[in-house]
Image 1 (cartoon, one colour):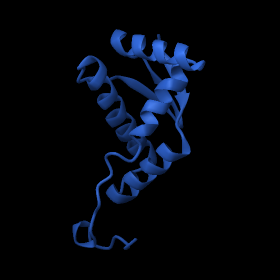
Image 2 (cartoon, helix red, strand yellow; image 1 turned 90 degrees about the vertical axis):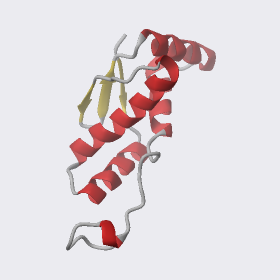
Image 3 (cartoon, helix red, strand yellow; image 1 turned 135 degrees about the vertical axis):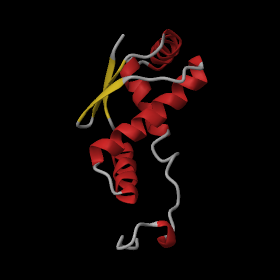
Length: 114
């Protein structure tokens, strides 16, 4: 089962902040943030350490493991929404989890202060 969802504004803003802090583009940052979230979710549910997904702008396509698919199905059935919406909520929970505080001294020379 391949699930697709559009990232929330919260996740997009976290990816933008990630990109700004690391001087990378938003597409790279979006992949990083989504990968971090999916790895955490899969690890908690299936102990998996590998995820493969596609990012197309703000749309994410992902085929969960059998264990995660079963969990998402149960949660979707219990809440009256589809599996993609449940996965989106789980991913969104991790939106800011991996942002670290960067001091001015840690930034590359010439990077503006916040």
